[in-house]
Amino acid sequence: MMVRTAAPGGDALLTVHAVTASYGATPVLHDVSLEVRPHEVVTVLGSNGTGKSTLLRVISGLLGADGGEIRFAGHRIDGLHPKEVVRLGIAHCPEGRKVFPDMTVRENLRLGAYAFGRPARDLVEDIERIYALFPRLRERERQAAGTLSGGEQQMLAVGRALMARPQLLMLDEPSLGLAPLVVQTLFEIIRDINGTGTAILLVEQNAYQALRVAHRGYVMETGRIVLEDSGDTLRDNPRVKAAYLGG
Image 1: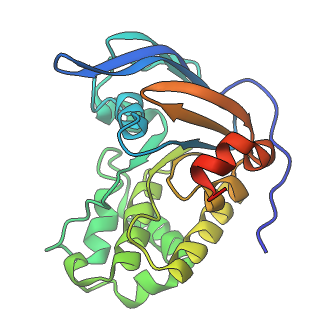
Image 2: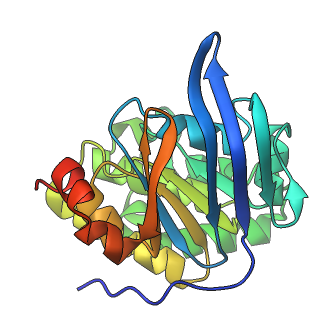
């Protein structure tokens, strides 16, 4: 059974304030504000096309914000290059896994640390840490990533993001397309990752699983935050139940 501790207190690690963003002439985010505190799991729920993935792309620097402000660990990060965002301590695991199919599992993992120029000994230690978290990846380490199952590719994508040693791990739809048993295992691992002290910002359509691991959550509709509360309270909210938990 997954047990969630109380939400950590303290100043926010990540603060998104009144952020707007668009794709060309099409507005996507409208005055979005949220925060993630140290050691906290925060989930963002919403239907397809509500701007959840866009929000993560703006935080990680893959898409520029049109307005507002983003701060992380005391630094203003909106406008920074994605490589600089990673170096400050944010790792983004994108929707669709985006592994390099012709490279081995081990090679994919090494790429997760490319921005840091760490000594070979440190890379080996980091890879061993990932293998301890995902034993299946150790079994597949010399196998091409494109030959892995969907669940194994998702483990690899998460492991590659963790190679950056992030303070904040952003996960975009990690359960998408996976079998129910694999989804359950994945969320147990997400809880374990958070248990090591890594804060997590989780975009997820599987509201049931997301709210089981989340300390707090936000609900997005048409690019706006419309609800914010603790994970337990959102799980019992009639509006959330009707829209995301099957009534």
